[in-house]
Amino acid sequence: MIKNKFKNTLVMAAGMALTGIAVSPAMAKLAAPTPEAKAKADETSAKAAWSARMDGYKLCQAQDQVAAKYRASAAAAGKPVPTPSATPPCSDPGPFAYAAPGEAKPIEAAGAHSPATTAASPPNTNQPSSEAHPATKK
Image (cartoon, rainbow, N blue to C red; front, top):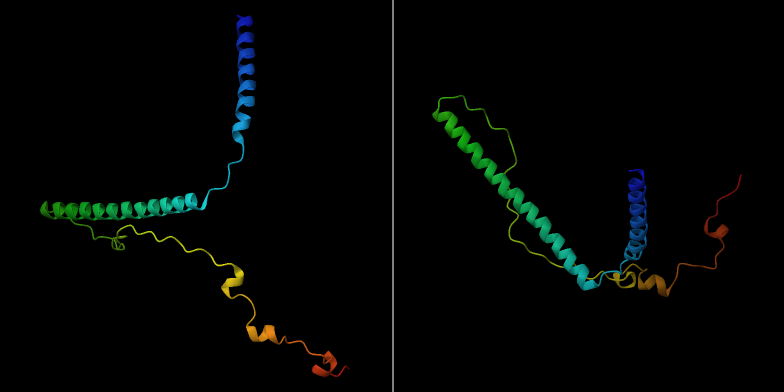
């Protein structure tokens, strides 16, 4: 019996070692996604977010219907009807519409540089700082 346990442990250790060797190449870093794949993933993400909002809207409507039926049945049975708590109305997310974001402009094209007048005539002068700022020392 002890020999079987040792044999089983040895087989498991060998299997784990082989698995570790066989799996390690599979943990290589994946290549960066192409712009098309990134756009498709962004659209899928937007559709999933819209779907979650639509599910919440449908749930809100179903809860309102159940509450209305409960109040109606309680009133018909002569039971006291509790006052409804104030909740925001169900908001319909509307149909799915995805607008792909435009390409980001590089900094140079975004107008981040100084205006042309400053670039043509920089604010530098040959005047010493002591003449520009005549503060007397005490």
